[in-house]
Image 1 (tube, rainbow over the protein chains, first blue to last red):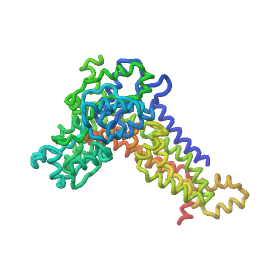
Image 2: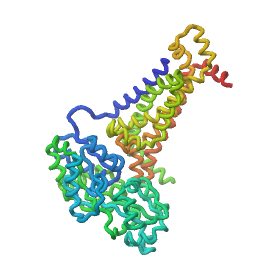
Image 3: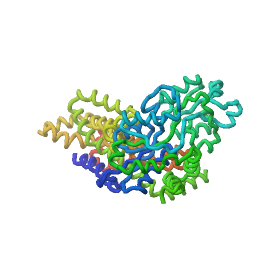
Image 4: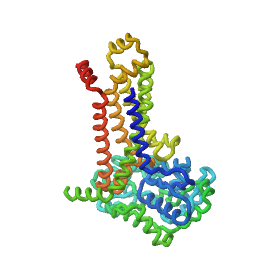
Length: 301
Length: 223
């Protein structure tokens, strides 16, 4: 009996001791918790926000980067576990707000979404960065040429010869993911295989799949020589990236909104693709790439 | 292959500090879960052996828990425990329960009834029988459960970096994201080593904690 108690005590003690050297952050004034989803671009943008807040204000920042998909970050923001993370207005439109109406004017998505997010969910987008990271379909350049595929409609005609690799989230997004896309274009792929985001590129490189869903600003497209097909029916909404922040946080940290807006309109699609490439292909760290970019723009010293 | 190994080696060396930190986080997460698993699992296992009616429902619930995918469980538990370590430990705790409970129950019920009878004949109370006869004799079976629970916890902990719990999963997922086998292995190899070492460590403990006399007696009784 003594031994059993000892065993349980020792296990917990070991965990606590390890926690001690893990250096848990606690006490002191509240920190702004910056989150990010688990793909390169979102982590880089999360880092930029974090570094900019640290440079421009006295607020403490805690990073919770590379969390699971949209579901985790969004839930985290709603619960108050996160204060801010980078979201895309198209995602808010179709996923968080569940709007199914086709988009009449892409330029108005941001305003429309932002108004409803504030009223219904207690959060808002600050100014968008300028980049539009839309969903798209990509396939090896060679294969596309061989079959004369340039648009989604071209692809739909020969889709039964190909296997589509997608990430789980894309498969599960009713309105702006595969279920909607399949209906809009009448896709009939030989098979649709869900997998982890990064594994899609491995799979397409090894020929396990021939078409994948991708992000327009993805650095990997260049590395694996993939072409983006044209969404000729305009199915996907725009996905303008912008910090999504709790209204409560903005009240608690009055300088925050102004700092976040410093990034407004600063990053083009091309610049973002380059930053993603630096991390994905050249193996630099997200933090380093973010810092360099902020310096280059003269936002930090 | 040689080129890959040397790339892997130099990556390990230049990132040793960070990898070590992740390993510590990983171990900490797993051990905390197993610790709580023991605190809850052993008493409940003992109760199950005492009140057999409990066995069905308890095992049913914990087995069902075992089949829920880690991320789904995390998505649910993060409402209670927030994003980060707390949820990570809670998820792993759920997975350690079943093996510990089952081992405690099996260990106690497989003690030779004649021994319990003899103890009762000597005038021992129920508590004394549990403390002096049943638990010591059940220990080696119980530790098998702890071993399984620990290995499960270490293995599952990798996925919990996705809810901000840290650990070696962070490195593995960074590797998957960048299609970098070096980084995937830099996370996976230490995680596998942790599991193997924990397994060996507990089986060492098993030998240390079971007195030699008991071991002989048990194996003689089993044969």
